Image 1 (tube, protein in one colour):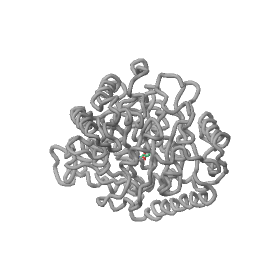
Image 2 (cartoon, rainbow, N blue to C red):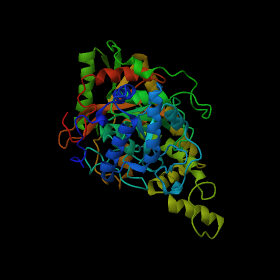
Image 3 (cartoon, helix red, strand yellow):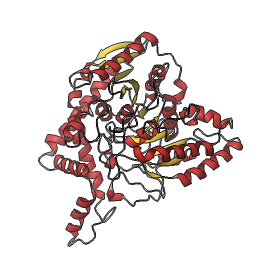
Image 4 (cartoon, protein in one colour):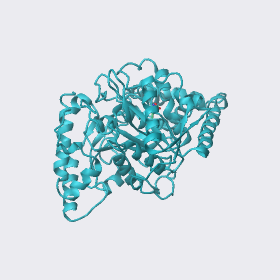
Length: 498
Ligand code: GLN
């Protein structure tokens, strides 16, 4: 795959979203040409990469032609003519939306998710639906009922999950940007595994109307791109209050890209001691520490050691809250209201049982059972309620830290991309690898992952997380834009030197 992924040095697929927009606006490039390049790219690499569940080339071609017409008329919308891929958990009108599950294999939503409506209004060209762990449950994309996605940097390794298809597609230049969802790290961890930028905004920043629910107090839609500006530009389009989603906040959306180039001198960055203890791969620790040092030495950021004392309970609390909510959200797939129905049930109860048993994957069943258990009478207080209390303490840890610092920097994953199959028989190890991402999710904070280095042998991407106070994505982006300057890992293509 690596040889095939070699791209011409003047390929427009190498350009950032910002640069593509400029060239499109100046008519140095047409959206039809650009889209055809992406389609050729998908056709040549995706057979092996496996990022797409469904491609929508026919619609993409039409939308690209329409974008060109609008450009000729002098129209300018933020993503006019730009190619975007969509995690297959996000509903697309008339286009299969599988959630990575057999249970809704044939579901074609009668309406678009709000984020899709917004992308289309901004002129984006959608090329297809991207692979994921079933219902977003997983960290390796291997829980998809449809296919395995490879890591473009090492085909025998996972691209991460659950938005592994989105991260891999952007890393392999199959689309300029992508949407993902992040419940406990599903945007940030695959971004770090694939050497791209992945942003999970504040809980409530983006509408979830039309997005298949996993754990509703945690789920948030976010973005992927090859650089910070691209991820910010796509987020700009999808963010904001939506009357169809009462959990979307009525706050004004600032211009995220406008903070590019703002000096960060004097900003205080917290480094949590708990995130650099046992279990962290030493090369990842080294790369993140080096990034913090660079921010200090080159950009004049002040580094402060902080403590998040309850972080050690975050994985446990997350897997209680998330599975509890999942067991309730997934009750609707019962063979009657939604989804697959077993062909010849004996009784009504047999119909429910068989439909669910036959069409949910192993991991989903495991989580439904866990979640049902922790919500059941007699265990509710001991597990679910306790997890909610721990969640509040974790949030308080962050709020205490934000009294002293503007943002927190941490590793994204304790492990570099692991081998496909490596953790599949050990769900607990897979859960534990979410240690650094679930904290920000439980606290509802904006957090992003960006490239900050590579392991030595084999050479695999390393990502670092920037976490900011609620509604302060601008703070996060300010630091990210600063760190991006002169960063030789950002935008690097698989199989090519830095
Ligand atoms: N890996 C985590 C889980 O399996 C996070 C998934 C996500 O954010 N959707 O729940």
